Each structure stands twice: as structure tokens, then as C-alpha cells.
Image (spheres, rainbow, N blue to C red):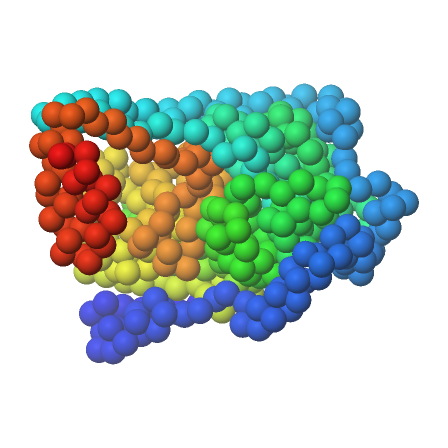
Amino acid sequence: MRRLDASEPGFAAEFDALVNDRRESDSDVSADVAAIIARVKAEGDAALADYTAKFDRFDLGASGWSISKEECAAAYEALAPELRDALNLAADRIRAYHAAQLPENRDYRDATGARLGARWNAVDAAGVYVPGGRAAYPSSVLMNILPAKVAGVGRIVMMTPTPGGETNPVVMAAAHIGGVDEIWRIGGAQAVAALAYGTDRIAPVDVVTGPGNAWVAEAKRQVYGVVGIDMVAGPSEIVVVADNRNAPHIIAADLLSQAEHDPTSQSILFTDDAAFADAVGKAVDAIIPTLGTATTMRESWDANGAIVVVPTLADAIPLCDRLAPEHLELAVDATEADALFAKVRHAGSVFLGRQTPEAIGDYVAGPNHVLPTGRRARFSSGLSVSDFMKRTSFLALDEASLAAIGPAAVALAGAEGLPAHALSVSQRLS
């Protein structure tokens, strides 16, 4: 774990190194993924069956390619009541939050009499990747499926690996709540390829979303353009800005909430009190051995964690903007949190005040937890309804409005050396 002090010589260089750290997998997976995609395009279902046998250790032909809606409904009914209620609460809040994101169509006339506007439509089909193994998260099922449902997507396809043929019943229950149309027991880069290009069994989709390992992320990057994608996501990260009025063990738990995801996750604390920084560091070390994810947290915190002492908490915000974190907690009084938030420019999602842990946002808050990582919050946003929709603009002119703006179009077409463009307009003007 790094300890930095903004008042010390050399801080700028140390912080630059922290900002520029590359935590994504350093394995060169690009060539492997390209080969997998090419094989799925060429061989279709046969390639999917072979890769599933190789990587997930089960036979699709014997075990079945898909998971039925009836199986998902049964998994839902078999849940403990408190877990079923928790999933329903999360779904209701996520659905309501995303319903408020639906864009409005526009249709108006300007001063020339021209009619202009735009109409929004959902994509026809969306594919959602849901990890298996270490990261089997029902919350991600809801976060990906429900915005697509709200957008009006007609066909939602879920791809999820089932190592050894085993399914996660809570994931299946979440799929039931979300209302997914198809579930295929296929994972990895090959699942993304199948969604993008289709096979005899699996029809292609228009958009692919959802988290995954380095191979899944690289596959999404390579198929972008054939399909839309949400983002190329990297390891999880959290930045916490906290004063000494917080309990150190609470802030330590906030930091570890992301460290437990993966050894490459990153947790960073900014504080204006050196003694509080020490106390949080000790609390982190005390908590780690008590939790079941201790090995992952220890590796993540030791390799990627950091505590940064700054003169004032306001001084932390420009540094946070340089990190452009996936999650930013402002663990201060409500008034100060609002003042600091007003200065934040780059963050995937921000959690305001002492009683708003990031972990709430992962489950039941409502805003989407699929967020840009690796400083991508500088130019991108979290998953939303608009990722499953596209806008079509339209224009209607009459003689008067064409006469008002047409001559300028003729002049510009001439300047660009495109005489047919000019002729298309000028013939109507004459």
C-alpha cells in the first residue's frame, strides 16, 4: 500500500505514477481472442461446444445448451424469502431510476418553417454477458437487463458460463425477475463472438453489455462496430475522500468493498488528517483477516491500495479528477459533500455523505453499477437506457423553407467540389 503526502517533495511524481498505473491484465490476449472470434465465425456452434468443453468442462450436447424460463422461475420460487425480497427491491429501484432516463422525441418547426426533430427507438436485440465462477453476480443481471427492458428492447439474450455444468440459482432468479428471453450456457470470448455474429442456434444481437474477464473485455473491443457495446471495463476501483469525523473501521470497510473483487482492484483514500490516515490503514489490516475474501483483499490492497494526505479535502478533488475513478465516496457532512461534489468533473458515480457507502450503489440504490474504469470516466458514462436505444433525426422542408436555406447549401457544396450535391438542391430552387 502506498502512502503519499501532498506536502512532501516528490509528491507530484509519485501521484503521476499512481494515476498512470496500468492494472488491466498484462497478458497479451488480443491474438487469442481474435482466433476465438474467427473460429466462432467460421464454425459456429461446433466451436462453441468445443470451447465450452475445454474451458468450462462440460458437454453442451449432453447437458443442454440453454436454461429455460421455467428453470429460472423455479430458482426464484426456491429462494429464501428475505433474499427474494431483496432482489425484488433492487429490481424495483433500478427499474424506476432507469425509467426516468427515457429520452423524449422532438418534433418542431424553426423560423424558416422547416420541420426538424428526432425519434428514439430501442435496438431489436441485446446480449448481456453474465460472468460465472469467481464473479457470479445477480446484481449485474438486474443492472444490465432492466435498462434494456425499460428501453423497449424486444429480445434480450443472456450468456453465462456454467463451469462443470453448475448454474448459480440466484443468478437464475435474477434473470427471471428481469424477464430475459434466452439464456445460453456459454462464456468467454466465444460467447461475445456468438452474440455479435450469430450461429445456427443463436441469432445475433445489436448491442452487447456486461462485465467479464480480460478475454471478454477484449472480445467486446474487437466486435465493436459489428455490434454496439457498453464499454471495455477493467478492474474495479474506489476513491474515498474522508475527514477525521468518520470511524476509521467504517472507511476501511468502504475501501475493502472494492478490494475484495479482484487482486487488480484499487482502493484509494484521500484525507486531510495524517493520524486518521494511520488509523484507517491499521483498520484495513485488522479487518482483512476476518473476512472470507482475505486473500484477494490482501493482494489488492498491498499492490494497488493508496492513502494520500492532502492539506484540505478541497485539494483532493483535482487529484480525484485526474484518477477519474469508477466510484467516488465523499464521506463528509452533507453540506460539505455537496460543495465538493460541485467541483467534481470526472467520476463514474459519486456517493454523497457519511451514510452513503458505495456498496449500496452496487445493489439497491437505483443508478447503474456498470461504470467506466481505468480513467475512462473522463470521456464515458455508466450503463443507461440510452445504451439500448438509438436516435433517428428527421427533416421536412417546403418551398419556403428550402428557399430560405437552400442557397447556402449550394454555396457550400460548390466550395467542397461536390457539384451533384449542389445540383440536387439548385434544381428545386429553380
